[in-house]
Length: 399
Image 1 (cartoon, one colour):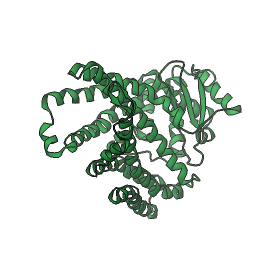
Image 2 (cartoon, helix red, strand yellow; image 1 turned 120 degrees about the vertical axis):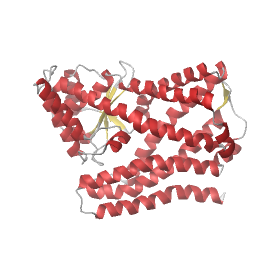
Image 3 (cartoon, one colour; image 1 turned 90 degrees about the vertical axis):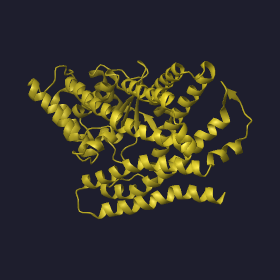
Image 4 (cartoon, helix red, strand yellow; image 1 turned 90 degrees about the horizontal axis):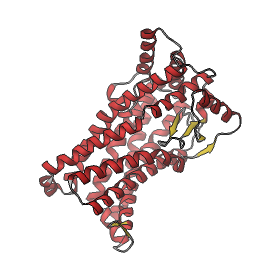
């Protein structure tokens, strides 16, 4: 028990100390603010992948999952052969252990971010943001795994069933994930003049979202917007108050058009197809190659480490490459709707409002799934030069 308690405390404290020391050094440098923030973001990208992997390895080494299962016991309901309490305990313990180092990392870096950007958000708000993201992820993964096991229980474990089941749960998970934002994110309905403003801009673009919600971004100086919803007629627009305050109508209309461009291009479903292809190939390859020797030698790690290697390639190289392309396509869609110069102005506004470095390396942009702002602006301006049209071919009448 003492070892387990020390492990859990260390998961939060050690990342906090390491990242606090690094952030302090970054803060003391004389680089521009955007460059210092970029250095912190790069470190967090690395930590965001390596820390959870290390936490899961330690979780296995200390047999904490087995202890959790022993505490739950064998009693409890079963659904399609899946022990609900045992499965829930494994998901809860795993994501709880993964969350601790991420919280430590965030708490270690945020004081420097607050100093550099003069933000006012409390540490608790930062932690709440991480918990919301992890909650969405845990529910998505839990539903996907439970569905996959249920399909196996009912239809068997042949290769076609495994791949078909994988495709089913991935598309259900991708379809469900946007709506989880409504559950886990702190938000309030957009009202009064701000609602009238966004309603008008959405109408100019030809969209009638089911709901408009305001996210708190003023205290963190986060200018962001997103459209959640994969089902027509059940789509929601989320905007931060900081974005509304920083953007004029033309810029805000361009940002909304970019988000609607993701919907029009079915970009979420494209990511789902890629995910099915990659992990379907993994299942098929494992059937023929197998990991028997590795699992005999390393146990759980014989499966986990190769899988995480595949996930790294998938997340950074494959999904990152697709996401970069989708961002350019969404920019092009927005430029056609609101005008190319308006789109350039919106991108410049986002960079300034978020203190984002305009140039970044390829690996960083793949890991973050976003091209650097400079590349996005250059792509839009190249379009202007190629077409000779700075306004766009589908400029709305009132935007």
